[in-house]
Amino acid sequence: MIDLSIIIPSYNEYDNLKNLIIKIEKIFLSKLNIELILVNNGSTDNTKKFLEKYLEISKFNIVCLNLKKNEGYGNGILQGIRVSKGEVIAWTHADMQCDINDVLLAYEKYCKYNNSNILVKGKRMGRSFLDYFLTLGMGFICTIIFQTKISDINAQPKLFSRKIVSLLSNAPKDFSLDLHLLLTAKKNEFIIEEIPVYFKKRLAGISKGGGGNLLNKFKLIKRTLVYIINTRKKWKL
Image (cartoon, helix red, strand yellow):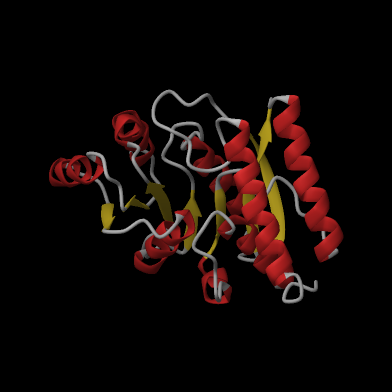
């Protein structure tokens, strides 16, 4: 029986994967029964070759899932969930900006409740005023429209019991998946708890979500607003 499945989608993160693997192997030295699912989300760099080579020598419980086409950040995670076996599922990013150890902190908090109707997520600390303001504004919009408090939507990790998987119907394949998960949890009366996390500076590669420059941030905001507008009637909470 697998206690925890950690899903990490990766799109053109070859330069970050080596350092990520080092951190991951330290986690596997713990007593937890962990399954790691590394999803190559249609990368065009050397990600696929690296993961295949690593899988051959790895002594740990690791699944490398190679998707031929990048259909979105959310799709990579959903495909990882599809093959996962853990009683608890978590996801985070491969860009080294999110600390993989935060998943263990989230799992520790989850276990303290002894309640499968708990979802644990990150709450980003020490951010710039602009990032904080944009996140606060998006959370405010969601709270007004859906009539329930939603904060720091895209903070990682996300960790929850397998029972929520069957509730993730018609989940989006893009970055709106994070919001979709939180709304699903709220609608089904899950308790949402947060842990403080620190978003680190990207050392290599290019940001694909809302990180990096202002253009990326506003693209993510636009995509999220489109999702909110298109689904607001569904999520009357």
